[in-house]
Amino acid sequence: MKDVREALMTGRNSEGCLVRRPISPFMLGSAYRFQISSTTSILHRIAGCVLGVGTLLLTLWLTCAAVGDSAFSVIQAFFASWIGLLMLFGFTVALFYHFCNGIRHLLWDAGIGFDIPDMRRNGILVFAATIILSVLFWGIAFWVS
Image 1: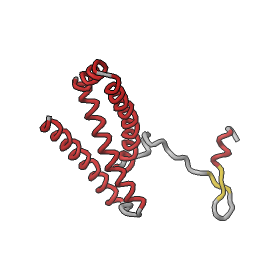
Image 2 (image 1 turned 135 degrees about the vertical axis):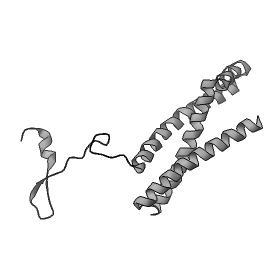
Image 3 (image 1 turned 60 degrees about the vertical axis):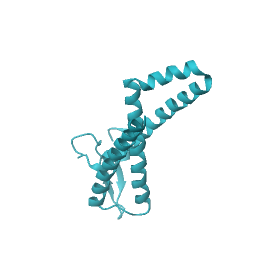
Image 4 (image 1 turned 180 degrees about the vertical axis):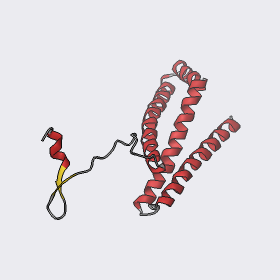
């Protein structure tokens, strides 16, 4: 045994014979082809992190509103700037994506949509619903204001 990790590579098959376990390739390497299910999974986790940061910004905005007029005007001016609007847009895209993909996960929990064509179709549907909901939300927001 050359390395301690070699012990982890050895196992027994169903007949009890020693076999060498396969090495799982890293998903970003040349041995793995990206699929829509892996992309949606990674983006779901990223969206969750974005929602966490966005919730902290929402808490900051509410705190400034409670503190008083000067603090609130500063945070309002920041959110009205192009960088603030970009952050708010990113937050809403992450929110709608996480919501739509969460519904997809609930359907999976019910045993619906596990076939490869269904996974591809509902993954594309999640992206389409995210874009439609985000554009609709911001369209209504700018139309009302």
